[in-house]
Image (cartoon, rainbow, N blue to C red; front, side, top):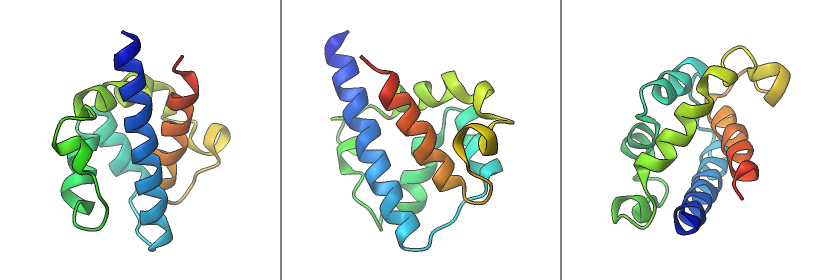
Length: 111
């Protein structure tokens, strides 16, 4: 289990860095779109398909980091996130910022 947590933390960190780079490039997602993909456990597939040519997500594609584990972690927290985007995370406009904030929350909670 410790090994899984190590790889989940590193996968979240990679997602955070890549998402920050996307925001820096002016990319935008609706909050609703990010939450929908969190609900459907398809967030990683969506982000990689849409932005894989702009940022390096190859460690997810080769299996170093598990898309399934990251999707599950986001799914586990999705009911708490909805309705708390602004109050808890300070996000009202860009779903990529919500993704970053939630990923930090998840990262901080992993031992």
